[in-house]
Each structure stands twice: as structure tokens, then as C-alpha cells.
Length: 286
Ligand SMILES: [Zn+2]
Image (cartoon, rainbow, N blue to C red; front, side, top):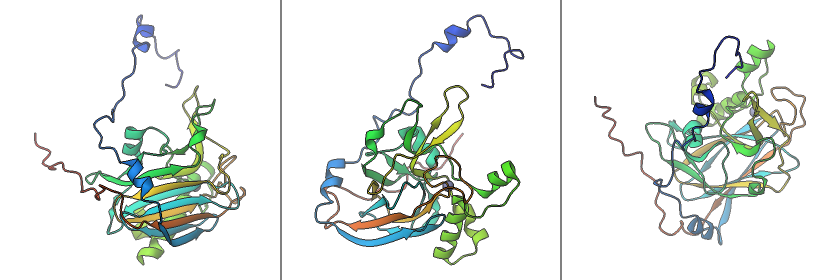
């Protein structure tokens, strides 16, 4: 799709082929759905048990036991956050943004779940409230909380600019995980993975299909709330792009801290059980 018609001739039935209607790759009618009402009811009388402030251009780790909730809260000013999630006992089980996107679409909101990588493939967390759900999709095709971007990283930055920058989200997440696990940065770096871009407003341009960003609509007091389906280790980076209205991977943008709050309900949601690992036998037979 690079618009080089001088090199490629259209077949006679080109328009007819284009007119074929799309089908959804992964219909989710058979996907077990979380009982959102039960989750939301479990918030009554909950207790805040932890709070972590993520400084601008840095990342911090946090723990959330299965059956508890956490919120990522905007404080002080518009700021985008890059979220990584691991199974607390095993960082090999990590958030799988690609399959989450295939199941729930390009941008997540209330009721969507964050799935873990193969061979685990189970719900790690469920989004239980999103104060930016009103945004929908704008006239440019942009929306909030995407699973289409990856994370700003110093390798792409080096390719594009030739310079070194050490406070990209990838590096921030690497430092935070290194500190939490007490292991060298190079050892934990491969566990850092594609993120949920919390509060970021993104899409693809209609003409070239390029990934775009625009100023986040988030304001102080907004939050994205999750229910932990399994014991979670999380890491959140306050992106050096700030509200991502202009650029990232530099110290130019105005940046703000983010707040992570962890809440323990009086009792788990009615009928809820922490999901087991995916049931596929792993025989891969021919
Ligand atoms: Zn970033």
C-alpha cells in the first residue's frame, strides 16, 4: 500500500475485489465475558492499600494481588503513561498487546481485558472504569488507550536521529524492573514489552496508514481502573512525550507525574475466580 501505480497494473476486477465486505477476524461472542456489574459492586467499601507516584520521565513498579483493583490517575497535568504487566511470580508471562488488539480492537476501555502472551493466554486484568470513555473516535480516527503503539525506545530514536536518549519509556521500564527484581538492566530488558498506552490519543492516518498521536484529552482527576485477574507486577512509565501533542524521546515536552493507586475490596466479586493458564494441550501435532 505504497501508491506506486506506475510499477503495478490494476486487474480489471480491482474495484469488485475492493468492494468485498470485511469480516471480523476474532468475533468475541464465544469469549467468556467478565461480570462487570459484580466487579463494580465489589468496589463498595474497598480500602486503598498502596499508592505509587511515577515521576515525569521515569517509571515505577507496583504489585496488585489477584482480586484487587488498581487505578492509573492523572495528576497535575495531561500526561501519557506506558504500562507493562507481568505475572507477579513469573515475568515470562507478560501482557500481549498484539492479541489484545486482535480481540478487542485498537483502543481499550471499560469491559476489555488485557491478555497474557503465549502459551499462557489468559486475562491478566479487566478494565472496570474509564473516565475518558466519552471520547470515542474523533474525526481523524483517533482514540484513547491504544494497543497499537509499542513504547518509545532508544533504539528507534538512535535509528531516526543518530542520538542517544536514556529516558524513553523502554529505558524507564527497564530501570524500574531492574530495581524491583534486583537484577542488572541488560538481564531484565528482554522482559520489557509492548505497552498499553494509557491516556495516549492515537490512530492511523487515512491516506498513508501511519501511526499518529495528538494531544491527550486527559485532565487531572481522570483515571483508568483495572481489576487484577491474577497476581500482577506492573510498571508504569510517565512518557517523556508528556501529553504527546508534539514529540517524544526528548526533554522538550512538558511532563507531569502519574499516580497508581491499589485498592483491596472487602470481598472478591461474586462468582469470580482467578483464571487458569490457557487449556491448549501444547502438543502441536501434525
Ligand atoms: Zn513513551
